[in-house]
Length: 105
Image (cartoon, rainbow, N blue to C red):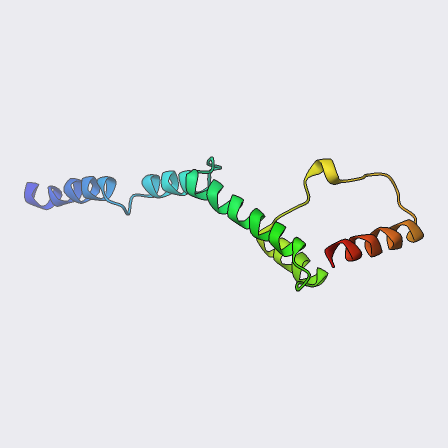
């Protein structure tokens, strides 16, 4: 009778120390989904993406739609110091967009 109950604690101990343990699974899940600081490679990749976006803005071969699509795909946003939060009239917006298009060409 003692031989029958011996494998049960051994199986429970093996399950506790294995990767199938629910506690270890949720601990790994919590760690992987936690917000972690960018490492050197992430910062370098962000710098490269921003440099490519700047080259695209300076190159007249790229259309505005292509530049916007690239920025949207990469999650690149305009820097806050360049944003103007006041309301803009339609005429002023049209003039501003025409000026930007002339500058790109």
